[in-house]
Image (cartoon, rainbow, N blue to C red; front, side, top):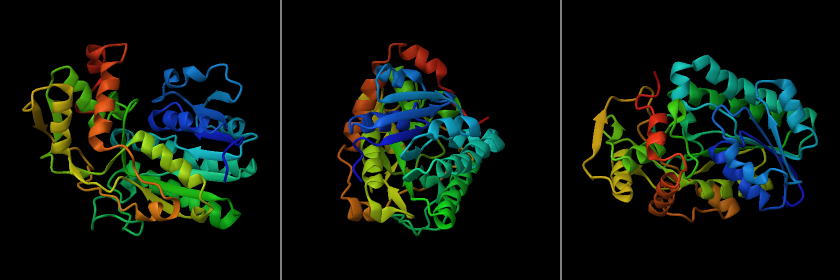
Length: 333
């Protein structure tokens, strides 16, 4: 599929990955519409598109059918990224389910009515739970540890159902851990890398929950959105599910040490603290299927990506102390 001239909707397009995807799609000369309720998204990430003829922003929620119907009108392709995160699901399970699972069903329903050409569902590696074998391919058992993971798996099931029952051209992508500029450090949306960077640039201890031996597979956000575009362009993936990850496993302890080094923080400024509930112990992607059918592979190394991300946080106009005031150490209670 040639994206040039296509009308594309990105749900959650003012968020971390969503706003980077908008940047990528704009460079493909698409008409872009974003729907976002700005709970986690920020208009500042899209402000450079204000007044652009091929850009439209809808302030709305994926849980409101009227908002979604307005957003999908005249759209060719939907990238459905809107969701609430892992830590949020621990203290707000029903709201998390409502947005992630029921919201997906609403977007699918309205997209079918609008006769979209393709629907790309952004799932998560959290649907797997802790690895039973590594690297984890698409046939790995699905045993999510949190309501977030379960709700993303429900969204996958609805997406497959719309392909099987209604013939919708759907694609499901399971990104592993994405990081980079614009990633969330605030409140219950905050995740390990951005939270650690904010603490490190302020000379604070980086928090490691548990023993730090948990492992993750991190992909820089520009590589992630490049993968999304490759996926929507690949008709072979219609009706299917594909992993998106770097294929490189690293411990949380090692990431904390790297962030301290890059940020100029003292290497020993790491505080080991309580284990996070529902924390997955091991995620390590086998993305060979995606590579085989699209040729995609990550271009930006973990170190280079961390340097770029630290530089972005250091350059924030609000300053390090204000960023730190937004970061919550135990962000699931």
